[in-house]
Amino acid sequence: MGAEWAVAKARAQAVGAEWVADKAQAVADVVWAKAVVVVAASALAMVAAVDAVVEVEAAAVGASRSRSQSIRVTIASGKGGTGKTTVAANLAYTLAQNGAEVHFVDCDVEEPNGYIFLKPDIERTRTVGILTPKVDRELCTGCGKCGEICQYGAIVVVKKTVLTFPTLCNGCGGCALVCPEDAITEIPREIGVIEEGMAGKVRFSQGVLNVGEARAVPIIRELTRKPLGKTVIFDAPPGTSCPVVESVRSSDYTVLVTEPTPFGLNDLELAVGMMRELKKPFAVVINRADTGDDRVKDYCAEQGIQVPLEIPDSREIAEAYSRGELIAEAVPGYSEGLMKLHEFISQELQR
Ligand code: SF4
Ligand code: SF4
Image (cartoon, rainbow, N blue to C red):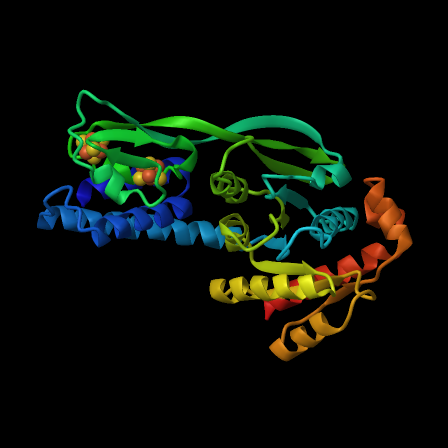
């Protein structure tokens, strides 16, 4: 396994230790699980492999420590339309207005809309790509090992002919690692962009996934890798799928925004299940709290989940929202609740 780990280590240096530590581990797990013997593992190679793992993991711990100097908060919701982005954008704005150094990061890469409220000046755009396999048919023997290891159906071997489906590929590199003929090279493929700039006092970043692309995680991973500022607000995609997990994984605290309806409760339960699986601290904000019924509040009380903020339904808020305005600017008193929410999160993180 020495060769695989050497590749993983080089990538760790190139693109960030924590991500590659996960990725290298995932690849290694798959390789071991499928008992694909790529290189005869001599004692020396195993020592090198262990050293590489320790080195990669140590770098990941270091990255995590330096990150802990800032507060990273993810605003998420089990479903769309609960007011998640409204809370995220207004929280970022309010904290910046009160002197904090804030970075708003829109991780909802399939439909980023924080810009509607924050109205940033975009200063830089950079592309995000992943490495996908290219097969040299002259070298390929049709052995099928690449198809066996791919967990995403992105490379399959039919009657000794290799077919690739780039949009399904997550760039793990497993197929290239196991190919006994070195017939696979990894070539970069653009999947989207990251746009960065300033929205008044708020540093702003958003990811935009190319139309037709299925893999949002690599862009979110890139977005969450190096945010700037003492306070970082991640606006997560709605739901509980991999892109949301990726957004939550990188943060210190998560706020689940919900509404007091049966649908809101159902999706909140799913989101709470996700948070408990991830073993990450979280609280709930109830939006339009004076509509619907009490089932969300009852559920939170039963489950011991804290609700530090309830936002009332208000015509003023709805009108400001429909005009694409920041509620904290348009509605007096709105920002006070958000400041209390931030205070609550800071206290929770110090406990
Ligand atoms: S592992 Fe390599 S040699 Fe085997 S089928 Fe895939 S590309 Fe061809
Ligand atoms: S095709 Fe893509 S996802 Fe599948 S093993 Fe290769 S790099 Fe990984």
